[in-house]
Image 1 (tube, helix red, strand yellow):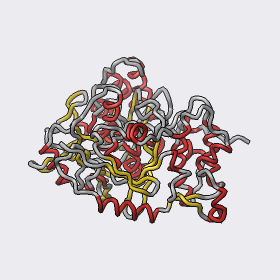
Image 2: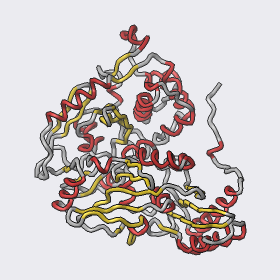
Image 3: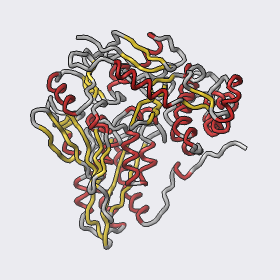
Image 4: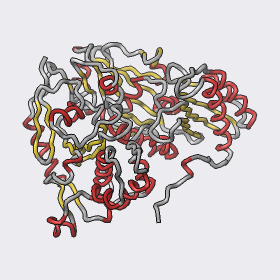
Length: 502
């Protein structure tokens, strides 16, 4: 079985690599094959952000930038994209001075993301610095270059996937806000897009004989799935990447679902939002928070931005991890999943019915999850999502609980509750829903339902929490929901702000 040549754009020139195994990570290619050792190898699991690079991809005629973790990203997944590492910011001829900076080009030696880190003393040991700089570069292109201010809150959110062990975050957040005041630099996007178009034209056509298969339509994707049932399915690789780096698994053939155009779309319908399975978590949460603004902080606490930029909503759902945060939310939103095969077409079922056991589901060997259907909210709907974890940002839930009650005339008309971290699969709290439906929405009802919720699950004890703690938290969160529904303000780290040093 042959390997398709890997091609991407770097410093304005196409890079072509042959014989790259399908399970080789982007970090391995950068450090070991290309000698780009500025990109650091830290945790190897997408947690620390030391390996952050920025990808550029054409979307709707525009260049879209994403900071991603190269340690768990498969190298072939960046085929046909532009790539920037920390070495490129001062060397790429397509990153050019703009405005007043253009007249003084010869005096500019660093990109504003780098210069701001120097001026704000944002680095000590320097190991995490390249990752921070690349996240800052992505922030610069996505915000500063569009005239958008970088607030303290935005900087905290977009740097949450980068960990620093010595400097502390205050000077790094200062650097994020200072970038816009430095002489401007910007990617020549028109030229990058032209070069990406030319590179795509020169690439050979995809065939099913390659060891890394990335079909560009749903039909060809399902055909490839039927023809290669043993191929490892990948999307953003935020979990499969760990199987490679931590469990040392090897895959001779990989089927990438993220190039199929139908799976990359968010479609707005009168009664529901249809989210393609290959839509990134960043874009999927953007679509959901546009409809439910109260979900914004919950969405930003799903890992860090580089993980959300790679990981997909469909991948998180199909993975079926009991501690995946998107599933309790989607269950509470009464979402349905659409499965498809080449032979039998499509079928639709409630998301909670997808799972049969720990990381097991009802999908046939030739089926794939192709989209998630999320109904639009009702007028009486009151939605709250709670994530309990040891660390506020970039951490895995001990308990995730999402409550969605339709309350009218002081009575619970309908209840949908999704829970994570309390069973072998993401679960719907059906007994608690029954205990609430048709009851007056009073404190006594909430307390009785909290007791039912605590008894409904038998969570295990592990490194994140004990079973007893999880049960207690379930009841506490339902009572918290009651208090918030009565106008009590939510008190949490959300109410705290980091002020810049004077």
